[in-house]
Image 1 (cartoon, rainbow, N blue to C red):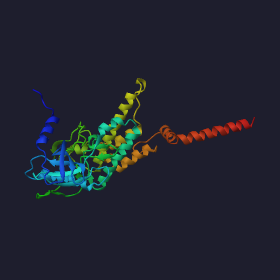
Image 2 (image 1 turned 90 degrees about the vertical axis):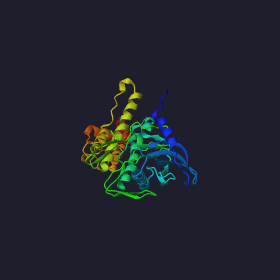
Image 3 (image 1 turned 30 degrees about the vertical axis):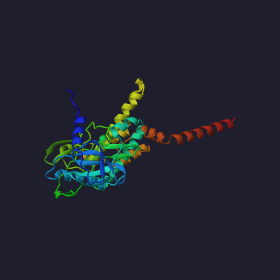
Image 4 (image 1 turned 45 degrees about the vertical axis):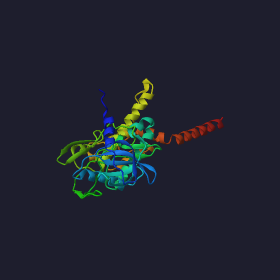
Amino acid sequence: MKWLSDQVVDRLQATLQLPDLSGTRYRALRYLGRGGMGTIWLAEDTVLDRRVALKVLDAEDDSGELASRLLREARILARLEHPGIVPVHDAGTLADGRVFYCMKYVEGQRLDHAVRNISSLLERLRLLERIAEPLAFAHSKGILHRDLKPENIMIGSFGEVLVMDWGVAKIKGSRQTARVIGRPEITREGVESKAEGDPTLDPSSTSTTSSIHLPETEHGRVLGTPGYMSPEQTRGDSVDERTDVFSLGAILNFMLSATAAKEADSLPRAGRSRPIPRPLQAICAKAMAPDPASRYASIADLSADLARYLEGLPVTAYRENLVERAGRVFARHRVAIVLVTAYLLMRLLLILFSRR
């Protein structure tokens, strides 16, 4: 007897649940993956002649609650019109009664795969800056991601950066209301719902760290991914922008660790101990501080410190000594210092020769 892998079983089950797209502009092409309550399908938009991704509810939903949660995820994405966030094109109810939404089909690699091909530390830091941009934008709209991790970030075929999976997102200070097309209105006061992580829309990629539900606490349900989830998230406490700051700091830590490992492999045995610069270690430590009050207050503040480091300026997270300051100044102004030194030496030589 030959046992089938879980991935093969998922594909077989999904094939049996092929969505009924009759009456819509879409034609299913192939199954891509599963994302919590829904399955992801590559489809053709027959009107615009382009490929799109459809997320279709695949669970039984007599109460309409799951449909409401799926549509809520789509509405959050629809509010976040940013180049770094996957756009939603359409949403509705299929002929078989299942709710769906249509989004851009993303081709590329997840960050945890793409980072293997980026050997330069500076390139990785520039990449992190680009990841921070859509997050800062979302925060400006009052939306927290709450499940940031390398598996939820896509690097497109032309280098574009996209933050994926907003199913755990929280809208700050709002009454969460979702009206499902063709279904009664459902209102939820103060309840944080979860549409588990969408798989990367790259069928060759599989998630190595999955989102999970942890037991409920007196404050509510704990949602997120261990290793990237802030301490207050783990406890089920209330969260704010600093929760995403912690997760972005964890991604920075992942990228720094990957850089150190790659450099160690490329160096001769005698030189395999190149440390991560202390200012970067300090930035990472501040972003991931256990106490939210000790972290950067916002994604923008974290990005600003990264920008200062990249420009050769002192960072707020680290107090450098005189030797470190001199080394930093020399590194930043190396060309000018060399030119001035060479000029002064030439002047000195001319003076010495003119006195003979």
